[in-house]
Picture 1 (cartoon, one colour):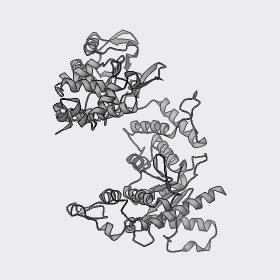
Picture 2 (cartoon, one colour; picture 1 turned 135 degrees about the horizontal axis):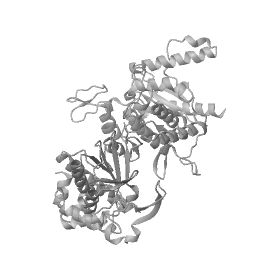
Picture 3 (cartoon, helix red, strand yellow; picture 1 turned 180 degrees about the vertical axis):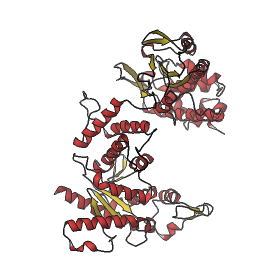
Picture 4 (cartoon, helix red, strand yellow; picture 1 turned 45 degrees about the vertical axis):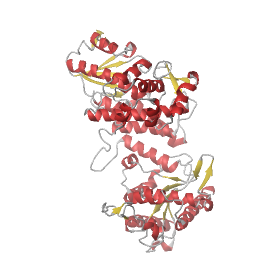
Length: 568
């Protein structure tokens, strides 16, 4: 039974609580015992235009309940879209795989782009509208008691509060009724329509813009047409006349903050500002989002800005040339930022592994050996406190830095490391970055690269031992800057899994045996990730991790060595 079907069969608060994985008395307490005035914290934030937006943030108990409700309704929303083969909703706000980018793409390269803003979008959706929607909408047809409870969880002061986790999805349900009317009007007038939250956009290549949607009062002044106003007001919304605008092909056309003239793009000014912030960060380890602000910006804020610009611009291309793979300006800037964030400006020693499973092994081992390696981890009031970090090599990280997964990607990272810091003038490199490798055939090219680097350094220092044939995998190797490379096992051909007892490696799951290969026979074997999650992580308190001590000893020695070098 799907979540939507479960919800449709629910007849009481008790049954509804069960779907949300709550006790009925807990929901009753939150809804009926906590005074209404104590359920929300109210504050104001400044909009870009200088106006103030009222935010009503729910207290933690209510917020968790609203988040559970939001998750349930999002599942129902996806189910409805899939059933009706309308996964591509007219609304692009507050939805997975939808954004201001997907919204803007619908209106690129048009003669006219007309934007309309709805007045007080969330507040205009009141208790009665929420309750009535879930009772009357044919996708739901909920019992009155259940619809009332949903409205009580979602609403405050007879409106959908901005700050509640369930306001976005409920606004999408109710906004969809508006979208149907808008798209019908758009079809009649040969326009394209889309909505992002309270922003409605109509665009067309017709010579004359349809008067049903917008009327030109003078050269630069357009107002919403009578038919458009009528349809919007029928649905209980109203237009914010101050934010109504028409944009022509001959000038800059904007939709939800993005340029849509020939292709979707960001404003030049926005990119230049991001570039300037990066320049200041790389030069002095700090920057300001706003020139007039006294508060420094954070890496998280700047990454959000750069990531967004990259996301928009990479719709067209990531590299200027496919032949030599020269990165575009934003790709090059994002690469520098990622190097700064992950390798230069770290606040703890960083461990870089070949894959996700290695991280799981090392974390589980360290938790069990914590008393012997207090330099690497400990416990705090918040629980386990790792004193080292593990690099999460995300899909975005791999794409921007152009690195593949596994040892091939790590070799590419090593090769770009020497020049990776040349743009940074601040006081970084406080801690080492440690690449942890198996001692198998796959790491052969990395071994050769380490040897070439060692030989280069020895020749510079006039060391006569520069022509050593074998690389000593017992040792750790300082490559460049704060980068070290070490092997988990000294035995040639050895892998990190060899540090476990044979009994652990022989563990069977549903009659299948563990295989370390990339390609496995799924009928008889299970993969590394299943081994890591279901054998190691699930049984970490029972497993003997003594074999991992030499690995952590090497890590300790590297940290100690680097700290000594840094203090000199």
